[in-house]
Length: 457
Image 1 (cartoon, one colour):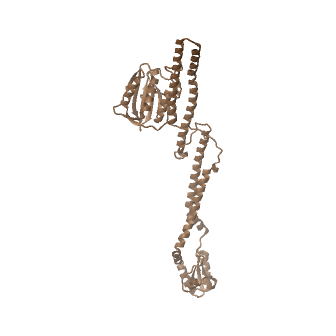
Image 2 (cartoon, one colour):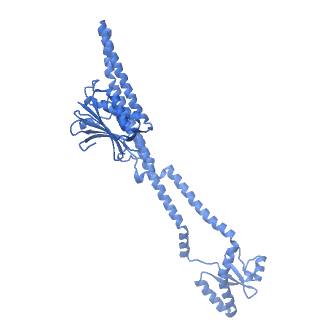
Image 3 (cartoon, helix red, strand yellow):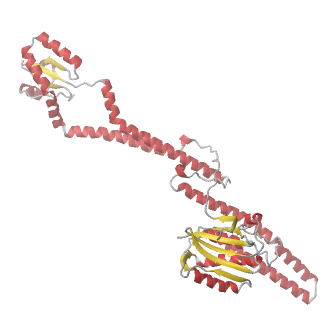
């Protein structure tokens, strides 16, 4: 394609979702089943976190109970030794005052109490007599036997300030708050995107075939893109079905009307020659209808099935030469080839591409004056196949609908040039199956170029 070509119209198979306002929905954002499931799941995870944390601490304390007691005893050993020394050097009042000051300012309370005030087992009493530290059932108070046979020093339990408790609790469960906040943010974000997609699906089901799911940051992985691909295909199928029904009902009227007229003429005449003429006309109309049905079935098959193509690497120069020989038997117009370098391989489905080229050449043959030019090239990672004619060209108004089924440029609808309006529609379908497109360009020196492009690889 040269700079002299002017783009008139492109039939593009690449799906580009149109931006549209999302339809309103009656659904409640916080009443969604999916949201409830996510909230339930994360609440279960939070409960599991608490259970595991608490259970792990209890299990740890149970296993290392003796080691922890020994460590606690060492923590309080210094306090005990100081109290023991002061007990023999200070008077009762001085010791009492000192202990009150310690208990007022320290986190480790210390008391000296009579032995009879303690509720201990025989084993614990025996341990006290032997100088072994005793832990009461609360596992927080530590008792040591003092000098006096009936006096015991009680050290603990260790106290914490309210602010320290709060800071420790906040620090301990801060990761949980982060986890919960992130989980809530993630769930609400996913719920929002799901609601957006649901609104689009509801709107599409109500007949708004132009609406598309948001992509990018609001997409749910590949789900939105897949939904848009499905929407584009369904829209195309719905429109194609509607157009085909309207067009077929319109196209069949003419041959059916001619058949009915000729039947009446046969019934009203006894002239054998006239009867034969009418029968030949009826046969031609039946052939006309048969050919139209054949074209229609071909188009419908391509439109509805869109099979996965079995692409092949084809030597494009040999393929074009072979196509030229076949086309020369079908048309009388001279065909000029612009052959690429020998050995250039092009990836395509050969049978469908042969059909595409035949339709393009057949269309060009209706309007060209002297020569039809065919060429192939590879530019910007795109295969390009074009068919040029030197006719009067196509106007922008004509090019808008040229690839729609049953669209014909010749308003006379005669059998020589009118056709059935399915040839270029089939071309567009074949290009779409190759993930390509068809463009209509106006040549600077007259005529039209039909350009088919599809991606390399």
